[in-house]
Amino acid sequence: MQIVEITGIINETPNIKTIEFKSDLELKPGQFVMAWLPGIDEIPLAITKTGKVCAVTIDNVGEATEAFHKLEIGSQIGIKGPFGNGFDLSANDYLLIAGGTGLAALTRAAEELSQAGKNLRIAIGAGTAETHFFVERMKALGEVHLATDDGSVGHHGFITIVAEDLIDIKKPEMILACGPEPMMSAAHFIAEQYDIPIQCSLERYMKCGFGICGSCQCGKYTVCKDGPVFDGKQLAEMEDFGKWKRDSSGKPVWF
Image 1 (cartoon, one colour):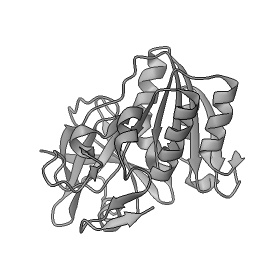
Image 2 (spheres, helix red, strand yellow; image 1 turned 180 degrees about the vertical axis):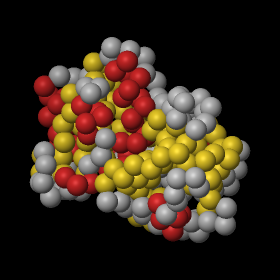
Image 3 (tube, one colour; image 1 turned 90 degrees about the vertical axis):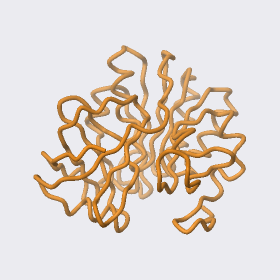
């Protein structure tokens, strides 16, 4: 574990912050780290910036994330990783589908694809206009399409509707998706209908980060060790994908 000092804090939205720190982390797009606050919790997070300055982007959704949001420049956190696998970025034409803070897990993949000169379309869904983040950052990388639940910006409704319209215009070679699991399940269904390879980055409750505790089990796979990125064939084998997950006590919670 590395103990790192926070060097910058960016308020992306009223509820989402990017926390910057200096680290020598090297990880593939799609891998994640476990971030630790002593006496609070250890949580899995996507790295949204690497290099001389690294960053994680955190939505304030519970006790642990609220504690991270209260940190200040100069505070210290623990970082373990990288964990898991990464995205296959070997194709030439991509459609990225992001829902909510799922965009954080796709950010570095989008940047690497853009730098490699790949064709890139990015469909981003959020609740409202003010909960969208990284939009300008994504516009610098590729063609961006937005959706909101309330219709305040972009398409009024599900981002998967936007994605299917984009597929009808031009079929991509590969889909990458991350967001709420029902959204990814819908994206997986669309990919199967159009016979497009898909990779989804799953998020489940994690305690250990390396496949021992079983709290992040999804079908026969553990998300932390076997994932978090799974292809369409693996997703089809998961009887619980898009249907239910386990809470901190191990009890199933239906979506």
